[in-house]
Image (tube, rainbow, N blue to C red; front, side):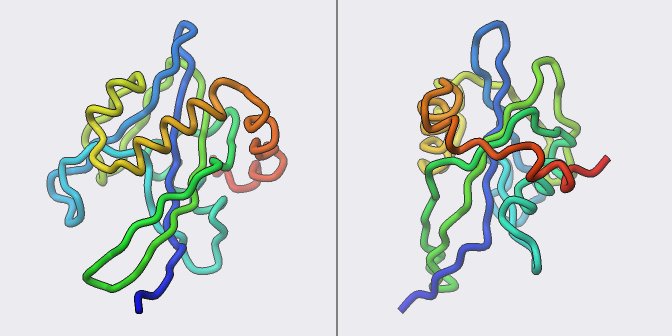
Length: 164
């Protein structure tokens, strides 16, 4: 029987540009061992003694140097099977709004970024789960519905984790 793991986070970053929503996609370095040269949203592992919230902010800053203007827990988790390790993984997903006009400073893990519409992101992303993250983020967070209000994480909760 597969074991269950929940030690991965994902962060969907968006910005409002001239009343249009743009999502940040990152292209993994060609030298990366796992999924080289693929487009993705931020993903990473939760380190020992770290919460999912702390990991999401750390990964966001490490991979892009961007800091959230607003931050939400996404009403969605991605679930996938790693058949090699016989593990079922469930990811914790977060959504971050950043200010317009600020581009990321990429870590060595990625070599390219693109601000995309949902339609563009859907064409570039490899994993259906990440496409769903962007769609759910758009429908329930970006459009500022009731879910957005309840899922928002107050800055006072995470301000201490924002380095720099």
